[in-house]
Length: 348
Image 1 (cartoon, rainbow, N blue to C red):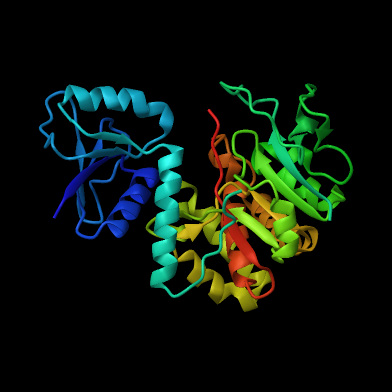
Image 2 (image 1 turned 45 degrees about the vertical axis):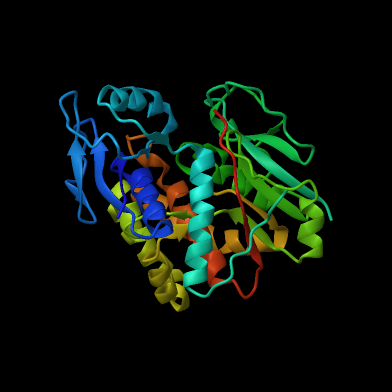
């Protein structure tokens, strides 16, 4: 039986652990490694979490996968090298994409389901979300002709960074500090005229073939979502561990009140582990209309109930809830809409 270490003890590291152990029979995680005193668990699924420092003793022959944000990788590599570790493998966005796709092929095969992806890479427009608060990219990125930038939170800023803003027409631009990219989603729903519409982020873009629009028409594709992400212990448990649990409980009560016929299916879905992150999509307008008509009453109710939070990250809970709700909606309505998946990049 071969063994590995994983550096990190939170969602990214745990997901990496699931990918690697499911894809490699007999592989065992010797330990999750951390180097700080933040709220780390003492063990993960029976695997110990070890705090390491300059005096730590590790098996230098074992590979170490770094399952943290990329901005920490150089520092962590330096620490691991100082401890004599010989095989250090940062889980870059590209490697994570590879693991995720391999895992999904395994998962769907094990469960007897089909997994459709847009590989290789009517009127259509993908709206790319930008904010006046965005940090500049290290390298220029040229948008394809079918993309257009939309500034979100425009009602909250005098600065204009895009020709299109989310404070025109029917909008909720002033909610952007909480709703994030959902203010663009709402604007697209209420104002966009194209038959096919999409949403991307200034750092995250779908990896699509040049003829993706033709494929959507010829292959009768209704929705493209990001390749699903695995989180543990479940979608519900992961949200409650990382965010404010009371928001999740209220969201579920609201879903039960508004859509009682879907509540049990939602409970089952949220006990699973896969969802499409980032609120990114490409959809036929009728699919978007159905999603937004269903989802925004839930999101507005949650925001009205919980209000604003001082913590800027946790204040974004409407967007975090929407990611899970969007994924559930298209699983629940899989017989109505043909959904396929596409990978996305991440720009530094």
